[in-house]
Image (cartoon, rainbow, N blue to C red):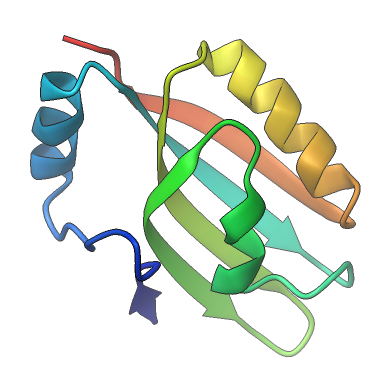
Length: 105
């Protein structure tokens, strides 16, 4: 299931995502969030991400696990975002990995 938060438009082409954010002098990263019994993980849960805005997200759910892959826009350094995301996810019983997609132009 692919979905986007109402405040943003879903972008189907990853290259379009990179080009769009480089023009706005933003960093673009991908976060993969996994829940295996923690708090409910859905698109609404992503509204309070620390230091980042969700541009696009995909959810995969099974009987015991939920995984979200999200394209994020942020201004902070990747290490700073990763640390904030790990604390945010850990407090909810989730794990997260963050990787860069693009740096500002």
